Length: 242
Image 1 (spheres, rainbow, N blue to C red):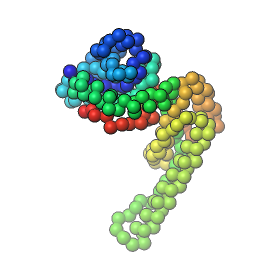
Image 2: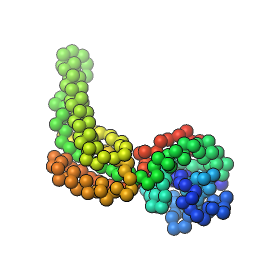
Image 3: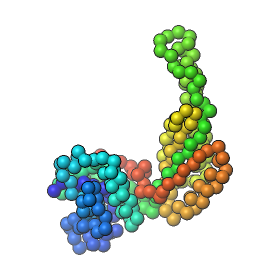
Image 4: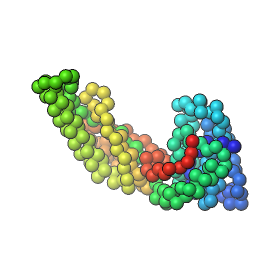
């Protein structure tokens, strides 16, 4: 039987697996396309899966992505999880077990590192005062070189502003780890997408700091979401999956 994989968790989080070596239904959580989810035991770990058919590969739409995230979030409510990438599946029981066995040490280290942690998301929209004043012109000559220099200068200034703002956000929220991306968001705007890894017990304090940040950073528009499973902080391995 082919299995679609959602996430890895500790086997001890599912008492129903203590005396079983075969997959057990995960009650109350439906998977992709309404399929029953199962807890697949693999050594001291468990993989949350549902049945997968070959034709399912053509049905991986936005709703399927939402269902994938929903299953992971439901499991995250009761245990530490290591999310699989959307679309990960294994051809049969042996393929799944081989993947867990070959990456067991890596998975266990990830679980230990992320136990009790959650991911918080901040989107920071700020005015981009470094907007290029002219386009890079094709061809050669003085105009072309001048436009290249101007564009490069604007990009350096934009990166410097983004770094300064990300440092400021780090000092405010003091996360255990962070992932930051920066991009232009329409004319005259810059968007920082920040993922912070924090202790789950500290989430209320983090939310209070968000309220303070919105008050002190009047020139920014800040949006907060979470807590989420630690998608950005799972160190990936070379798992053999399709």
